[in-house]
Length: 335
Image (cartoon, rainbow, N blue to C red; front, top):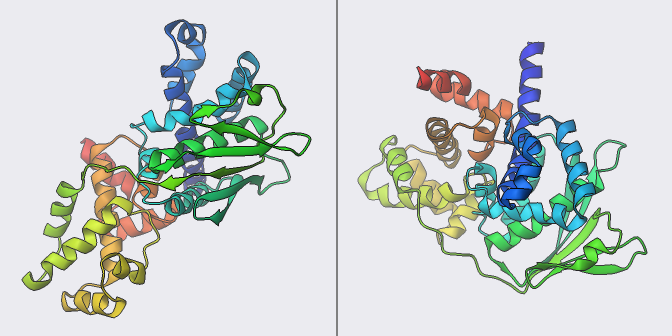
């Protein structure tokens, strides 16, 4: 039991670390050929999925010393090109800044992160950020730069326009460090810790994304027995949930999205011998199975992307539904 628990803890820590390492990997892949060659050993290490936490810190420290703070801040902008990482891909599918922030909090909780970001939505078009630690040790200022840049890039990626970011320097003066899609040169001239920062945007205009859920939708609906008169409504429910399956769905919110009442939605599901919670749970298991079949990602990443609150919850629900653990399911696919 103890060894199994320790294995889960190690997997969870690897899950969080790898997602950030993928950003560094993407950033390095975009550097010039000469620069890549000068860091060949470092690049090879980053490509390793089992990139130790201490080695990641040493790499960022080395990059900080060799280049400048602007480079670290810019790593986060690689998120829009890290298409092979389902965590960042899912974040970029957020339907609003608020959904993005909710997803970030769930990411930290799922990964049991010791360094976190407190996010306060000040207005519809702005938010404040403060990085803190749940331990006595303060977050690393270099990593703060990376997280700040990542937040800017994610907000831009989901459709926030004219993004501006400010942060206080050592004198306590709030300085603009990002505006007009450019990292200001003042980042290299002043000393910033990036423990706190503020981001505002002019408007939110989400991009039109291609519908890639039809195949998943069809296969899930086939697994349900739905009466003909309710089939269209169940399809609308599932189609609404698939793109944001990680969202903490509430029946009243879904009813509002679909233009109906909570009671009407519950009554319709009852007529089909379904419940709101059973549909959400079954859809998450279905998506988890699809991810396990399609991509070579660790179990924790699959559980997170399928919307489960933690790894143990994912493992327990998966076994109850499929009669085996996610790891066993994945091994059987490889036989």
